[in-house]
Length: 382
Image 1 (cartoon, rainbow, N blue to C red):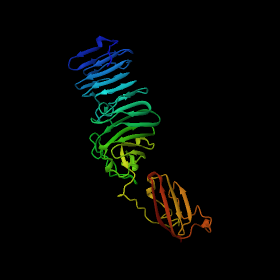
Image 2 (cartoon, helix red, strand yellow):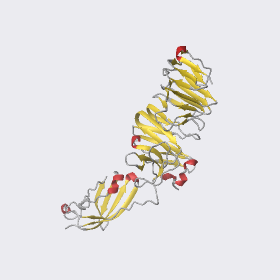
Image 3 (cartoon, rainbow, N blue to C red):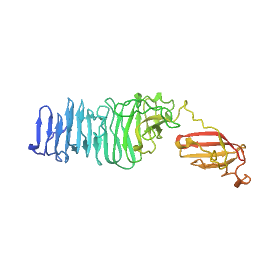
Image 4 (cartoon, one colour):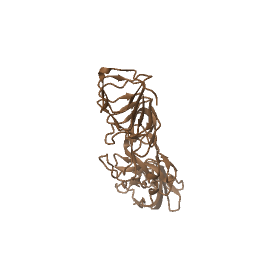
């Protein structure tokens, strides 16, 4: 630990109180070669945002930061085994150094965070020292959120397509069906088509406005073995705020049942309330597309082959074959456009009159859900 000196502050604006710690009423500054170490609370009711040196919190007893204004530190470190509690946001413009003890924010208020500026970074985050609550960033494209709960570091790695004006994240070791600090619940049985099981052990709350990928990791308490017997099926899932359901955000998973990680596909964080682990397979959930009747006579009833399930998979491929197995219709990103006319098969007689009545079968590939189905349709002409 370094030896610290306060280069400059105004005595008239500073009040030292034996029980409360240090209270800033006016203007306080730590200069480039200086530092300030606190063994008690900081109450900031003045200006404390033009710092260049190091701010340290050192205590064997719980300490807190509160007041009317958020302090902004250049370098900051924590050596407080029982925790540093934030009632207001603390900003860091350079290095946030985790030595021992957690920085804790209330999960009921995501506006109180440990905030990292555009050039800021952090070092030393471990199970013994991290943020038990919310971390936010400003002006960053990629960032590892040093978050967790009282027991473990459970980071989320954010990689965005552009610089995030702001983004924030917190980890919750809770069942999403019964969250303690959200006004809504996230029923793990309410899922988009093709999604299997959803983790009930933990979740992350991420906010951001830039399309991004995330990387999250699991360990023994994540309960991965309760989700699947195939690690390759692990994916990132998110609760859609508008559709009120869990959706597959894609992923490439590596590891075993005791530890591993998964990286999502690119998605918009603003669309999803919380994120966790899920599976793309579910042997107990079978999508059974029916057989169809097509009567293209212009009466508005069954004139087209319409498949409602395609709303879940805009990226798809439809192929229709006759009873002899010859391809007569093919379309990528099918949108209910088949009305009995061929797009393939030069052998079809009088193509401009449409395909003849009879039985056909279809093969539908739903790329978004990694699923494939086949069924029959009967084309009936007058």
